Length: 68
Image (cartoon, rainbow, N blue to C red):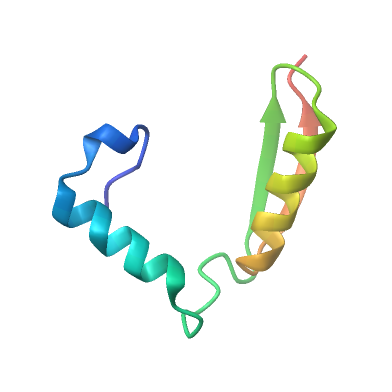
């Protein structure tokens, strides 16, 4: 398994595969039954809420905690 840290880390073929997968609606919820800790250095409601919704859409349970 690889982690995507920067879009330039992907080859054109890999990027195409990621974009194809993003359009599919039949994928299983990859975070089903798992908790995800969301830790942010700076407070941001928009970032926090978008990350919480992303985790929920992937089947997980987001838990927000402050970085300090």
